[in-house]
Length: 93
Image (tube, rainbow, N blue to C red; front, top):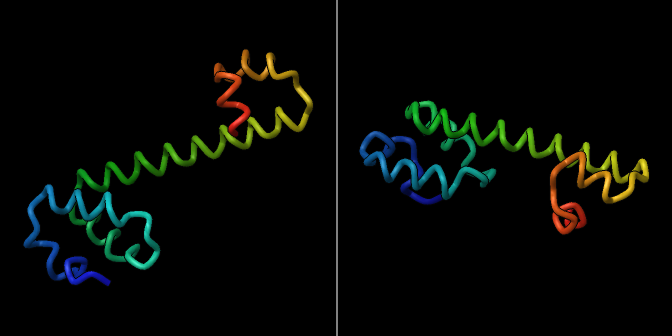
């Protein structure tokens, strides 16, 4: 684990450095506990984490709904009308 991620160093980091740490390491399992401590210390980072998690859940729900529509055999044009997505985007999903 990088030395800069040790909890005792968080208070000495500038705000922009804390944001950089959060953005760089938030997806790594091995740093999850430390990142959680970081966003608990910083209100702005905590709000960002909540927003990202909300977007992720909404995205997963949309993907599930899209798969349900595809599995029902709906015509592609109907799926485009329902979702507002392009044909290319639907085919990628």
